[in-house]
Amino acid sequence: MQQDLFQLRAEVAQAQQNALRAKTELEGLSVQLDRRVREQRADSDRQSAALTQRLDGLAFTLSTVSARLDELAAHVDALGRQLRAAGVPAPTRPAPAPIATPPPPLPPAAAPQAAPLTAPARPTTGALQPQDIYQAAYIDFSKGSYSLAIAGFREFLRRYPDHDLAGNAQYWIGEGYTALARSYANADQADKEAEALNQAVQEFRKVLANYPRADKASTALYKEALALLDLKQPQQAAARLQYLVDNFPQAEETPLAKERLAALKRNGSAR
Image 1 (cartoon, rainbow, N blue to C red):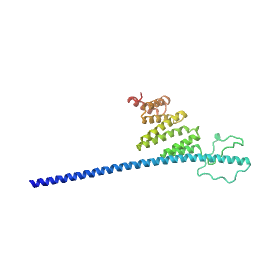
Image 2 (cartoon, helix red, strand yellow; image 1 turned 90 degrees about the vertical axis):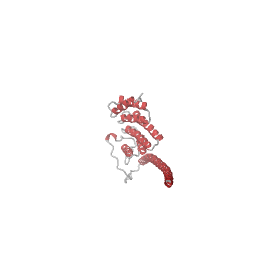
Image 3 (cartoon, one colour; image 1 turned 120 degrees about the horizontal axis):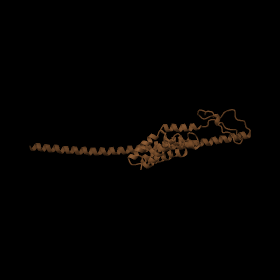
Image 4 (tube, rainbow, N blue to C red; image 1 turned 30 degrees about the vertical axis):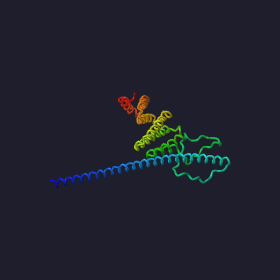
């Protein structure tokens, strides 16, 4: 019996040592796992920051190139006026055109009127049309290049603030910031998410302020309200939803706005 007792005690001691060793290994593995998670999160944040910086750089480059194109076009106009004033005939060999499909001819209604020699009509060979800039920005948005899309739509508005598509361009700027806010939310960047949402609210609000008859006016109102809800501002959101219901009763978003209003009232958030 005594020998059995000694053997049992030895086995218990061995089991305790094994348990202690396992506990030590488990703690070591836990520390390693935590370190790897932190490293991966840091890498993800660095990659996200690098991509954001890259997009901002591309947006700046786009704006710079657009400004340079305007300068070159003005320079070409000035040279043309000087040649005509000096009586120099136009060259028989056409100047090389940019790598792009030539724009369609102007419709009769948009044809330039007769003007004095001191203000000749601007040549249209190779010039970008408004739809070209708008379409390029929309393609960037469709590809997920939201910063580039925002820059493109802003350039469209800078050049053609009174175009029929100006209201739509302003709306897509708001959508671009909304999409950026979602990407920041997925990356757990709450400060940048809130900043992008606030900017989206301002951009959507400009649609109704500057283009009240635009096709996207009612949609912009609804999207503005959704952004306000994401910003935890239910009273302001309810006010915009009510404005939508009162002023756009036939809009596609109006039934959705009514449902949102009813839910806010049930939760007591619309007071």
